[in-house]
Image 1 (spheres, rainbow, N blue to C red):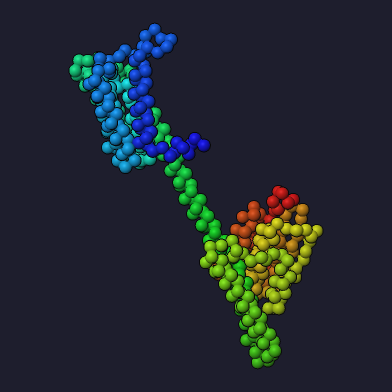
Image 2: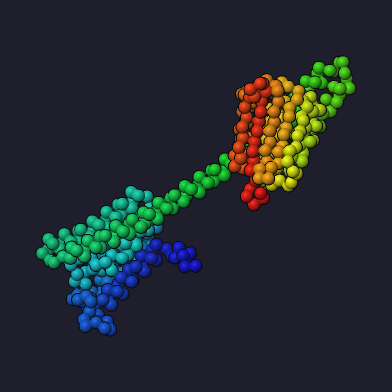
Length: 391
């Protein structure tokens, strides 16, 4: 519960808090606390005088004002915080800028490194280290004593603050890139799913329509009744396809793409086989294994793979028969579609069907193969393993 509270505090407030803590500890270290024989740090000449307190007040005002601009003008705000650190050191009589007076600078460096580009944060770090070096150089040129070892420790804290902020910046950038990649992947996955469903809805029906139209054309004069029956099949198939497309477009317009997948499964296989057989390509279906309920995603994908394979038989094989084998095992479902035609799936207009079948099997961690048979014909096979919980 504390982390969201910390995130709501602005960088300027954290900078002011760091300055306040440093100032309070500065005074505490210069008095004799209970249990101490003397104060931890010798008091400066000006720290208890009105002019020393006035300098501390000015330094506090400059630091707080600059901290509030840290979000919008980071380098200018850091310059103000550095001025406050230098002014706050003056009444202490110290030979260096103490760590307590540099805490606000460290906090500002962290936020700049966490939120700004690398070039800006490195400029801020260089400015902070430059001020430390300039302070020591001024005292040396003035013939005053300097605390080089203490100042090196202060410089190290500035580097550590920058490293912590830079690490936060990298983690945030990586998280943003990961979210962008995940969004792009989700969009691509959904686009491919819609493309597969559109292909499955249209391709088989168009194949049946083309087959029936060709049959009607051939027997138009010699067998009018058969031609009328073929035209009736074309009409019903076209209406069914149009209804599927309308359902798909309606789901997309309503922002519910998950509804575009029609509730079809292997229970509809006999109807698919009968319609294809009526169109002129006999489909023999063989069921192996003990009947048992199938997971919905396995059931739908198996039906779509069989449907697409039959569509390829109708469109590309040049044969009038094919065989479908459905083998229900204890831990997987296997489907196989074979024909004795001249081979199919190799033409320039047939690649999407094979890609879609392969993608369906891969999404379910299954295996897919499609290749010509040695003695002629073509074989499509898929193995779809059940999820662990339903084995």
